[in-house]
Length: 232
Image 1 (spheres, rainbow, N blue to C red):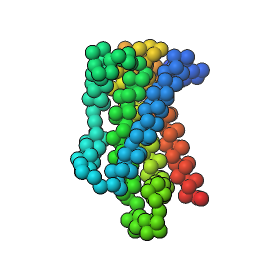
Image 2: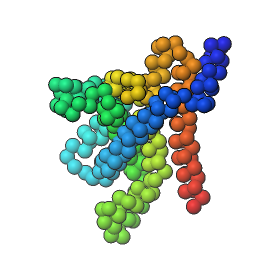
Image 3: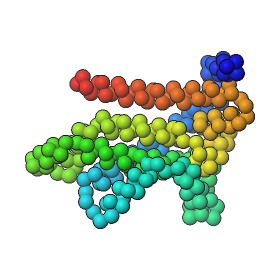
Image 4: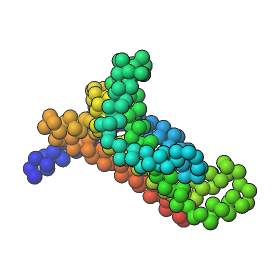
């Protein structure tokens, strides 16, 4: 207990005033995970809508692959990206190995199935009678999709939080493709793992507290939006 108490005491000193290294790590984490979440949403929401409302050959297989991808081990995503970006790989000419861009790529692979699967579930949960009513009124495809997404907006907000939380907490793939290089690819999760291995529990606790704070702020933002919408 004394070790934990001392770790929290020293972590507080690192957090305020914040250490420059801690600020840099936090900002890079937000950049990487935020970009990966945005890309995951831009790709996953339309794909989820397609799987929810359109029938086509192979749809069942695509839904199964999406469900399986929601539990994709991060190291598998890291391995796939590493092979693609390695010097002799298909995308090796881009020179993106051990860069934030490679980490974003890996996190998108992890976030995309989650966003897609939750989007499918959110849209399919809308009352079927409402869907029929909208179609009977002559709504076009885009109008129909917009109204469905509006009806499922709160589950879709939860999808955003789930995607961002998954990207924010990811460590294995980021470590594999980013290398945890100081000042270049070191983010909160990989830095925490490294500091624990070094026995620097004060910095590890400080990094973990920042991670928890970011998660709390996102969840608080979702709750505020839900309450505001409910009051409206």
